[in-house]
Each structure stands twice: as C-alpha cells, then as structure tokens.
Image 1 (cartoon, rainbow, N blue to C red):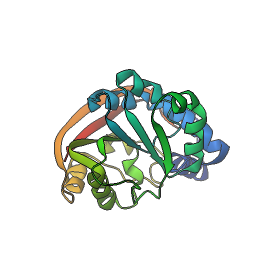
Image 2: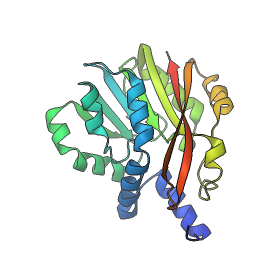
Image 3: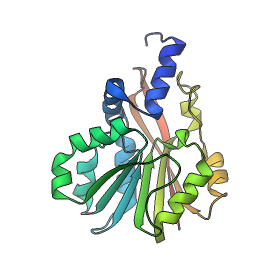
Length: 219
C-alpha cells in the first residue's frame, strides 16, 4: 500500500461521506464496485414484493438499480445529500427512469421529505457512520415506514473499520452494542442482526477481509 498524507486521508474520508465534483464521481464508481456485495446481501434480505415502495438513503451513483428490478417491480425512491450523486444516479439510470417508477431526490440528511407510513422497506448501506443526528434520523425513518414494514441498516463492523487509516476523519464507527443502544432511543425493534464478510479492495487500495452486519429493524 502506498503511503497517504493526512490531507489525502482526510480527502478520502470527505468524499466517502459526501462525494462531490469529479473526484466524487470517481469515488462513487469505486464505492459501487467495492461495496456491491454488501448491497447485494442487503437486497437479498429485503424480501421485496411487486408493488412495494422502497426507500434508499445514500444510494451513491445507484449502479445497483438493475439488481433491484430483477427482484421485484417496486417503486424506488432514492435520497442523497450529494447533488453530484443525485445527478450521477439520474445519468446512469436513464433507462430505468423511463421504464419504471424511480425517483432520485436531495435531502438534508436529517428530515425525510415524504409522508408518514409510505414505504414497505427502507435500506441504507455504509451511511450510518456519517449521520449527523442518528437518533433523530432513525425516528424519521420510522415515521415514513408502513406498520409492519422494515428498515435494513448495513454497516462494516467497528473492529474492521478502525484498521482503516481514513476513518479518523468524519466517521462514527458502530458495533452491535452501539447499534442496539441507538435503536433503543427510537420505537424500532431489532428483529435480526446478520453477520457477513467479504474480500474486497479498501478505498486506499489494499485488499481486505471486511466484516459487516445487516441489521433488520421492524415497525
């Protein structure tokens, strides 16, 4: 692995938390490739059915949208804090925007701009580290989920993440205990936390064995 300066590590962390500009586009492409197994595992856990309404927080360039429609014909809603990512997702998924019910919107990372009890499923992969007010956002997610609906939060384990040199900037790391404490501040119930692992490339270039979890929360 080549050595990175602190400024370079901080820039990596900044682009991971909120990809912007051409560097953000390039980082989003890397994220889509290196995180795809986490995303696929999350999609497989959703139990999607035709006509479901699915909300995804922090979809990046949404290069995985085709995989969703291979599972079920859903109404897909994506929320991003990054205008670069919103526009990149629109550009990369023009055919799906034409053929399916797909919506890409911006939000402030705190208030979800949708009505109560709208979604059957909510998913988010590798975003929880960057939530400004985790308890408030999780309560917002609860509000927009239909009774009986579920939220899926996929995150890399703290024990793995703390080995990465860039996470000292912008990241709040999670393990099961910390997630359980967070969920305990909301009306959600934890239905399951599933352990997973894969072999992928870190954002600084080295190959790593990544340990992650998919937490299923129920309303």
